[in-house]
Image (spheres, rainbow, N blue to C red):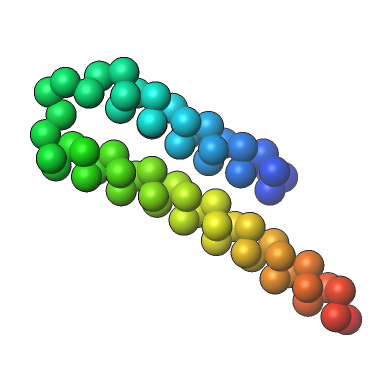
Length: 64
């Protein structure tokens, strides 16, 4: 699978998670809010790590 496709899937998961959380805000307690925020942040971290890994790999290839 290409990196771009993986990033798009992560971004789509973030979008879906945010949309679902906002469509049904009633009945969510503090724990559920924290869980959703944590999942969103985890997906963002995964995207950042992936982008950083690709950039590092490209820098190493360039330096050779």
